[in-house]
Image 1 (tube, rainbow, N blue to C red):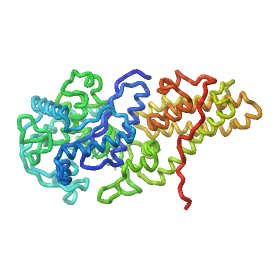
Image 2: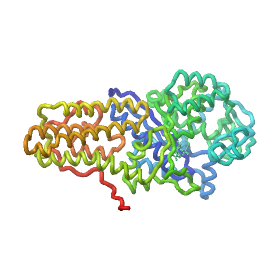
Image 3: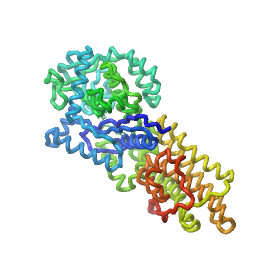
Image 4: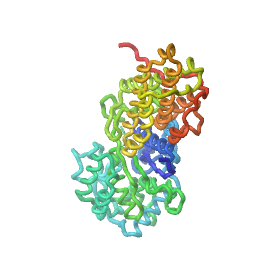
Length: 510
Ligand code: MSP
């Protein structure tokens, strides 16, 4: 039910050592679809994305580019903003960890942890991977490398530590009491067994480089980049001002969306930092899988990264958005292939939903005086199709609560399938010769179904959804989910000439 309840959703903040790629686009799009869905459903949404700009990895990339770190960050961060714009992402804020608001927030959180005795000075000796920005023990290494395959270096330096070892039992209790905290289940099991295996105190400062948030009262240290980065989620709500409207409204976050590689940071370290600071942990962390490219792992060294700007250029924006979210069950790994992309665009968009609209709206134009047809008495078949379309919203809500974005889309398309079948069976082109009232009813039922589908595809395909609704002459205030029940199209409403929304991609014959 639309109720104005707050909904705070975040993407990870992206490292600025690299150009945006399909992985970044995917995480951001998944969040965008959820944010748009919740907004259309009457929730008060705050959607955050941004860039992670400190740490050794970024410092090294800046040096390699011959730029001062901040100058480098300014340039690369801008590419991520461009990506969000190009993807038509509806984020409410874009945070950069080099901003003053964030540095103050990190330092305040640090102080709070110090005051509660959760941080102490010691010294670190162990392995560190700059690529992963992660500490590893001897036992973690595989053939002298990080378990991720990243190179490691030996680090020995004075360091502040966070008393993570003291938080194991409280974390396990927290997971127990909040079964929905980590999804999918496979990731939850991974995290629980990691915590059960025993936690060691975590090194949270570095002295061997400078590019980070200075530790309060000890400027020889900069904060560990993950403590800095995770804090962005509360900085954006005004922390340390916990009386701010945004903080009071939106914290704890409803949903941190992350890739499967960074679950531990979000589901172990982050709630431990927050609980240690006596702040509420987020409500849920959900990890999606990774994309491969035509069956191969994506890596810069293989030169097979997928540029999201190219995808938009080649296939179209809404087509790309639809493909990425429909093709792979959210939470599992998936493969990008040109064939699969073209297949989805042609089968689901052009031949299915696109064709349905074209068939219905062109007949309405020609045979119903270009206006919304009046419904006569409804048959069982009419009622069945309308019932299926009207039942969609509640079942999409359930799918979204379970993060089953692909399922939500499959359900929408099942109704489009049913409508295509219905038009074939009812054959309004034949009724035209025998029973104009029945023909009008059949087309009226179909326009109503298209209206519902048009409203419900908006989260995944905002521009195409709008084009569909334009063709039904729906005013702007009749496009949210509540309008499905509230504002059916009145009989006789003039409808504009139909235009194709989903072009087919022609492939050369083999
Ligand atoms: N800066 C950290 C996050 C800090 S959040 C407080 C980081 N940044 S990242 O730029 O390296 O990665 C961002 C996201 O992209 C991660 O969620 C990661 O899982 C995702 N992906 C990177 N490559 C990917 C694929 N090939 N496929 C899908 N997502 C992938 O980690």
